[in-house]
Length: 505
Image (cartoon, rainbow, N blue to C red; front, side, top):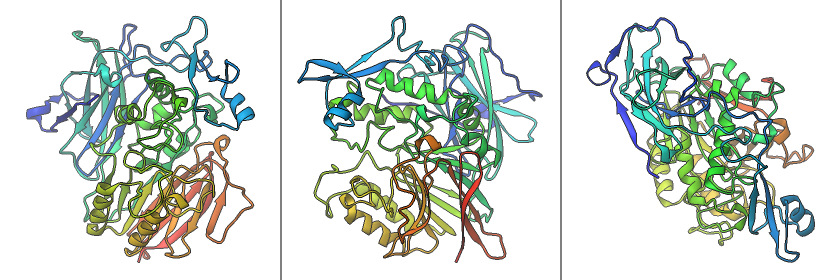
């Protein structure tokens, strides 16, 4: 499934200009199509951005209170089907490698289960202008792609650095002249490499749908608190959602995206805040997976389907590893840890890798070439740790110790370098005992999902340890009397839990 990319110039010659629009309105008529899973803004640079649009057949997703399928696995010894809990208790198999059966409640299917927002054919276009400008640019009407779950990526280029843009996505039925829905948003472009402006961004990970915490039923509370701080952008380090327990086929995997991004807090946040999306194991396929993974546990859904589906569901560049510059102050590197990795059980050594040869060479080259004041390597999985001893699939573990050591030693030859990681279900700040490299774990999205470490087990490496949900905020301040970078851990209600200020040398 190959997605097409549409490039539109901001000049009148290609994009055209629209009259001034004095007021935004949500335009919805009963026939549809609609934007019930919102829009996403991503891959922002000083001159470009990618806008993700998806059309749906209904104004709102199906109620969360509606039934959902249940999954059973086959026990060959008894000839019976049982839920996952049975195998964990009887055989100590957390993810049983057994035949799968998905059972829908009577009268329900993939289109009307809880959270479903089935896609719809239709056409979309994008209106956009610099904030305060009098005239709007527009892209041409174009049909969404059914094979891409009725979504499309629209790339905007020739934007101005450090500028705020308003956008409005419009939808209509194919061949119809009347708009059926619209949704508005905004974003800021980054600055050119020589511009020394302050930068503020947020980092999150591990969003388990069943662990939502907003009592109003709108999803995760952190979205409201992050947006209130007006970050320049968000980095989602992966585990955007969890396929493992229900997504046993491609249609069920698509439904997982529908219900997660149909949540009201997410819809509102992502149309107003650009995000760089990364993936990890649970939003690629299943726990601790790699390309050659084999397990009946995931039913008909495959690793490669997961890789392709992620590209369809978020605004993404052609390669999953990439780097972005935010002025003189900051450059971030977003690493891919699933598509190129060796088998977790392979003997450790120079040939065993999480990043793969091409990504490693790209990273070393671009990292060495950068003259940014601060360099931040963002990884879906830990590089410093410490991590639990039973884990074997990241650079802080013995399973990939050789490559982990090499990365830590390489990046510490450059000043003002830091690691941010997702994946772990607890917040921490740690410092490698050998190289002095610091790592900041943002922690999971909710307290309900926080686990995996004993809060009393504070090791010498730890500057901060907390088994809670929340998010990480980062501020780079090159214009201070003493230039600094500030890392702040927040709780799920936006409260400050810990802050680390570091002078930029």
